[in-house]
Image 1: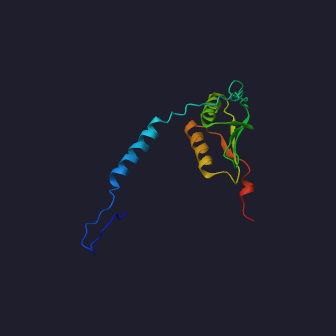
Image 2 (image 1 turned 60 degrees about the vertical axis):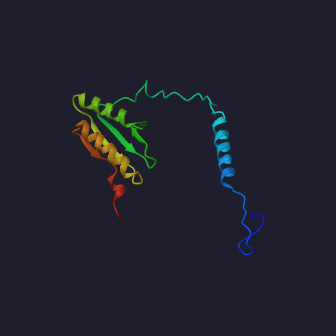
Image 3 (image 1 turned 90 degrees about the vertical axis):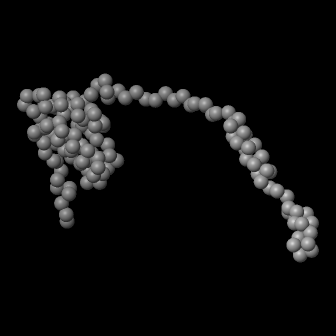
Length: 141
């Protein structure tokens, strides 16, 4: 903002110095941010309890089916499980005599990474009687 004068008329060019004003505003802004109270509001929600952990689906002594649906859900004989539970069930089947068959049935639309992870868990468990079920759904027309 020019107060008076300029280079043309020989008068000194007088302009308001904005740097201190900006510095003061920044300090005030930082102080305002620091003094805002921290939000510690919490919403308490009662989550459902998973009852399948206490009553696991039985392991069939003849054959068990592991399937993967398009959403990436892994199921053991129709009951959804996670990878840790799958590993536990596979260890239990290995301890049985004779070892039950394991049928693996991935959906054609299932994510490859999930199916690969399931197959890796099966391989690490040491299951010897394993087969793929439903291969006819993959044939090309």
